[in-house]
Length: 377
Image 1 (cartoon, rainbow, N blue to C red):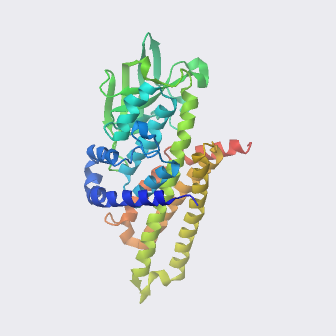
Image 2 (image 1 turned 180 degrees about the vertical axis):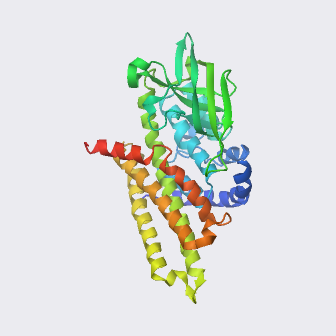
Image 3 (image 1 turned 30 degrees about the horizontal axis):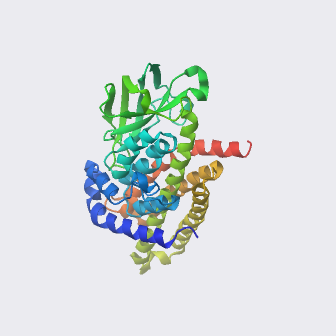
């Protein structure tokens, strides 16, 4: 219903690349983080511009091309690398492309599609995460520049990025009209990476804290019209949540298949453990939840692909998909028992990685508040 022969050909192409050039290195990258060069390789193969027009180096595909990439990265167990690629393709670059000038697209989006630039999205602050309206990073206009002061935290690819799309507040008194999105390039005086952060999962990607002190950013780096930053960010968050849902439920499917195979081969009391009703029914529950949420995610992705703006459905998809991913990973550990708790089995890492989905791009609680508003509650 949603995938054409071209999508399936793309899927096989991505799968082959990941199997040969990425998966053999995942254990090493969990310890050291992935090398920047892998982004260049993604770019050379066209995977960082699947939905962008050919005149910008993209492949001219539809939204389900992006879904295929996200699903295959989840299937391959990329974890932090997959998240970093999603940030590049579906979070940091789309606002620059949609709201930026032709010059800005050529300067920042084109190199990102090639994998020559790594991009980051800087929203969260130490005292403002879910409460985006509470950010305090200030960009004060000074002639042809903005003077930026503030701190960002939990920024994926923050340590390695060539540029970051930074959410700033220019005027506290203007409310939602007082926000701007600025591209701030690494190397700009006053832009510092103060530390990289240790975290529960997604170990192969770097997560950083950024500091801006009297950072002079050209007005030419403003994305969109002045004062439209909040509105444009709200649009960006819908795409971020949509791709998060697609990747989460694909990851759950991978772990379900692994667990089912394990249960059919693991012997206890003279028979495969899949023959015990308690295990059999747990597997059925896992598969049923995944199938239902997967169908809803695809349906919502089809609306987004058509240019619709289904905020309720995107929020519901993200909420359900990330919750089910956590539930499935937890069930998998229970079925594998002690093996599931061990580092060498993939369900342990899946459990750690999945937990971020219920926090990033809007927590469960924020998703429920958004959904409630769409019902008039």
